[in-house]
Image (cartoon, rainbow, N blue to C red; front, top):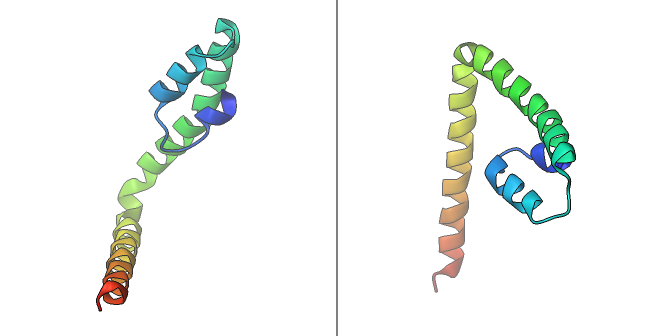
Length: 82
């Protein structure tokens, strides 16, 4: 439960539902959930505080990701054409 909470991008609802299908006790579930949420909350809070200072980095990184995806799609389509 604790390790599942540390995975970024995975909904806590899905993890909690999956945990309800196991034999985990309520107390263990609460403790593991609370401890698993703390690191993610601290990171999100830190990044949220620093976001205005790093907007340019986010935009550059987003451009690189989108550009790379566009190039990969163009290359893949070029290989599939006879």
